[in-house]
Image (cartoon, rainbow, N blue to C red; front, side, top):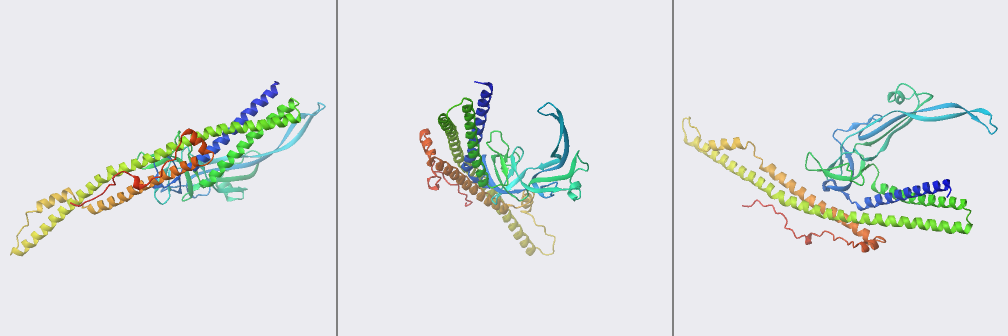
Amino acid sequence: MQPHLFIILLVGGALVLLCMWAALRAARMRRYMLDTPTSKCEGVFVGDVELQGTAESDTPVHSYLAEIACVHYTWEVSEHWERTVVETYRDEKGNTRTRTRTESGSTTIASGGEQLPFYLSDGTGHVLIRPDGASVETVTVVSEYCSPGDPLYYGKGPRGAIADSTHRRTFREEAIPLHHEIFVMGRARERQDMVAAEIAADRDARIFLISVRKEAEIGRGYAWGAWLWGIFGAVILLAAFLILANENSLSNGARLLGSIATVVGYIALYAFFWTWALYNSLTTLRERVRRAWSNIDVELKRRCDLLPNLAASVKGLRDHEAETQKVIALLRSQAALAATDVRGGGARVVGLAPLFTALAERYPELVAQQGFLKLQEELVRTENRIALSRTYYNGIATAFNARIAGFPHMLLAMLAGLRAFPMFEATRLERQSERVSFAE
C-alpha cells in the first residue's frame, strides 16, 4: 500500500472512531438525563440528582459591565484591528513579485469574571450549589459593538489602543442573574457545616451542569448531537473508501457494492457499541433504583430514632413548666392568705419561695410552647422527607420500568435478566409507624 493511502486509511479510521465515540456519548448523556427524575430541593439525597429552580444568594456579586446582581458572570472586551501586508512570492516563471493583502481580526484586551456558591430554590426548600468545576451555561446580558464616542468604550475598557486598531471594540458579558430560572444536574453530598445536602464537583460524577436552559432543550441538543456525529462518521468512512476505490481504479459496480458494505459495516459496529452502552446504562439505572429504595429505609430509620427522643425532650419541658406553674400558683395563694391574716405589716412570706428561686435560676425561661412548635415542624418535615423519598423512588423506578418495557430495550433486558421494580405502596409497607403521644 502506498504511504499516502495508508495515511488516509489511518486518519479516516481515527476520525470515524472519534465521531462514533462522540455520538454514543451524546446519546448516553441524553438517556442519563431522561432516566433521572427532577427532584424537589427538600427531597435531595446523596447521589446523582437534577433540580429546577431559581438562583438565590444573600450576598450576590455584581457583574462588571451590566452591574446587575448575579451568582456567576464572565466578561470580555475585544478590540478590532486591520492591517495591510506586503508579501513577496515567485510566479510560475520564477520571477520575484510582490502583492498586498488586508488582514483583519480582533484581540481580547481585557476579561474577567466571578462566581460564588449560591442556593437553588424551588418553593419546597433550597440546596447549596458550589459551581467550581461545573459546566456553566449562561445568558448574555451585554453585547455591544461601539466606538470611542460611546461611554462604554473607555468607561469599561482600557485607555490605550492595540497596534493597527480600528478603534472599534466589542463588549460581551455572560451571567446567571439573581432569581433567574436554572437547571442543575450533578452529584449531591452532605454538607460539612450542617445536616443538609449540597451539589458540588465530583470526579466520579457523570455530569455537573448548571444551565439557564430547560431540561427538554438540553436533551434535544444531545439528541441532535448523537445524530449529527453518527452521520458525520459514516460520511467520513464512505469518503475514505471512495478515495481508496479511485486509487485502485475499481469499477462502478464494485464501488457501489463496496459503498453499501462500508455503510452496513459502520452501522453494525455502531450497533455493537450502542448495545454495549445501553446495557451499561440499564445496569446503572437499576443500581440507582436500589439506592432510591434504600433512601426510604434511611428516612424511616431517621424518623424512628429522632422523633421519640425529640418527643421525650418536649415532654420533659412540658412537665417542668407544669411543675413551675404549680409552684407559682401556690406562692400566690400563700401570699394572698398572708396578706389577709396579718395585721399591722411586717410579715414575710416563706415556705415555697426558696424552691421557686431555685427553679427560676435553673430554668430562666419556660419554653415548652416553643418546644411543641418545633416538634410539630419536625414532624411535618420528617413526613415530607419520607414522602419525597418515596416519590423519588417511584420516579426512578418508573423510568427503569419504562426503559425495559420498550423496544429494543426489552430484548436486552430479557437476555440480561433485568426485571421491573414494583411501585411503592403504603399498604405493603411492613413497618410500624411512629406515634407521638404525651398522655400519662
